[in-house]
Image 1 (cartoon, one colour):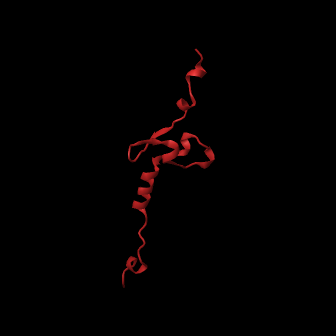
Image 2: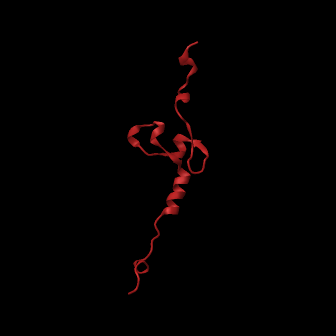
Image 3: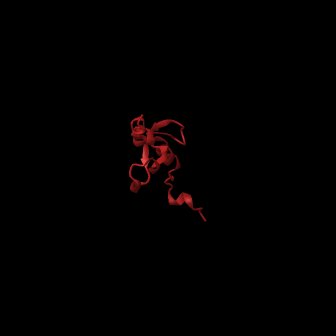
Length: 75
């Protein structure tokens, strides 16, 4: 039995990852943003939060565009 025949490249690479926010298991290459561009396509170069959760978090935490006269008290 040859060890090289038993191990495929898919066994060594993580193709699925569980999102830390929603808990769903999604495809690493399609559903996660790459955070470290200089690392290539290593699994550690991808975010732990899926694209959908990251978009909703950014929209939820976006700074409100308030006019200047509402920010300061009228003295």
